[in-house]
Amino acid sequence: MPNHGTTTEAVTSKKYSRWRTIGVVISTAAILVLFVTVCASLYGLVSLNGQLMDQIHAVDTKWMQTEKTIAEMQETLRTTLQKRSDAVAVMQPLQHPDNDAMQAIEAQHLVAMARDYLEFDYHPELALKLLQAADQSLSQSSDMDLLSIRNTLAKDIAALQAIPRVDVTEGYMQLAILSDQIDSLPLGSPTLADHSPKPSEQSSSIPWWKSALQATWEGLQKIIVIRHIDTETQPFVAPDQQLFFYQTIKSQLAVAQWALLHHQQKIYQLSLTQIIHWIKQYAQPEAALTQQMLTTLTEWQRADIHPSVPDVSSALQALQTFKSKK
Image (cartoon, rainbow, N blue to C red; front, side, top):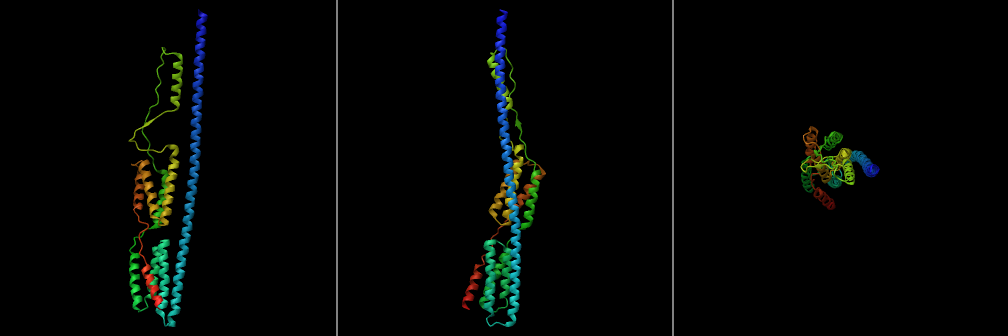
């Protein structure tokens, strides 16, 4: 009888050892799967961050090219106006018998340039200077038709002067400052209810195989913990996703800067609206930096960077008609 009891205990111990081994193997496999998932997520985040930095660099390059283009256009305008002044200075002493026609041709050229700047490049300031130059060109004439054209030009000039001005440089710098401050934006953190499993009491009355299964199940529950987030809790950004969140906002700010430089109202509004939504949703609402950013973004979101401009085609058509009569 003693030998039979010893044999039974040995068999039971061996079965316990076998189930513990199975539990360890399953736990190890779960840890490996979790490790591979985390590595894949980090790799994807690094790749996406690189793409965002490339996009920001591209926007900066376009901004430098745009500045160069604007400088060239301004220089071209100054050269054109200087040539016009030189030509007028040369022509005036000659007392050309058809001086009105010459002035109309010159004014037509200037008004055509103003129309192109308004329709294709949206440069009200340059167009205003061109219309003023066209009006000055016609100021020496006493022809009644040209006086009527000057009245039309005066209305167009007044309409251009009434266009609300947006300080593009100031807006660009404000958005750049916000981009530098994004990394310091305090993000919200959730209040999590811990639903991790509690260790169950071992009962000597349950069979050994049920006890082994229960031990394995409790081990798995300690590896994979399910937490419940209340539906009224503020959404949050996981710590390993915060860098991606900041880079996404910076990318949208770069898009808004590009739209501001090119007077693209819809793109500008959409970008700032999305940024404001993200900050309200994920940042700490009571933080001073959060409130400061929202105030600045809301203020510049209201800016009309593409106000309507007058149609100067009526003055251009009148000048063409006058020239055809001559």
